[in-house]
Length: 300
Ligand code: NAD
Image 1 (cartoon, rainbow, N blue to C red):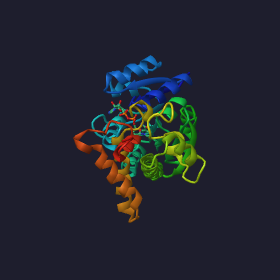
Image 2: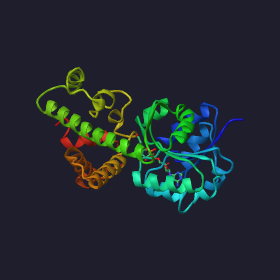
Image 3: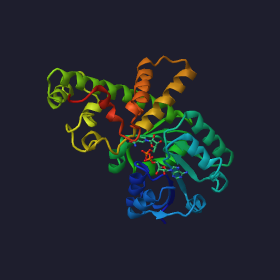
């Protein structure tokens, strides 16, 4: 019989991830407080759960893909208290990007009830979620990660085991701090070229074959109209929102503070994303993070 998965958080990422599990033959029960997200999941073949409790009744696996750690802790420990309702042995995979300390709290509470918890934040964006090419960066016990692998393999192309509980989150925020740094660097290099008469497309082609080549330039060019199918070419809609990048940079800075690590480039990127979030009284936090390009001025 098909395994039943309770899926919490059917947003930009969770929606397509759940759809890929349906395609792989899992029975997926979707729960999200936003009706439109549930409707999209149902159109993809999930069944709508009336409540958190209804979603997990008899489920073999619980997956969550939520915006932040407070919501994850509220779901498993506090308000919804899911751990009280799960049978021992039910596998929990939290794919949200949250503080490592939060992941460790959830995992410790699960362990007390015999519920293995894997933190499995992802990299690869909405396109990766749709194409099932995400990278999962896991933290937790080796046998729990081994149990998670077959499911994750239907939603992603790479599955890493970074270490114990919380290690997936640490690796993820190191990655996203670097992502913010090279996105800002790419945006300022493009603007410098344009300010000096270069065509941003030609400059992009040159840098792609030169030592400035990086993921932002290759997969996610922030200048509008250079690449198809990236947020920059659709008004910076969809993708990875500025507010989520602000969250990840905040997590990176809190982690650096605790480990006495020096992260000057990350600190500057955090400051720029904070500034940009409300630049000129506009709320830019719902735009894709590549829209940081706009801070540098544009064509004029
Ligand atoms: P999103 O805001 O599009 O989706 C989050 C969904 O969670 C929303 O539909 C919201 O209604 C739902 N939700 C909130 N509380 C809930 C609850 N208690 N139960 C069930 N659902 C609940 O965000 P997203 O872009 O899908 O990101 C989700 C997570 O993935 C975040 O932690 C983010 O940092 C991470 N992430 C996002 C991207 C990206 O490119 N968007 C890439 C990698 C990682």
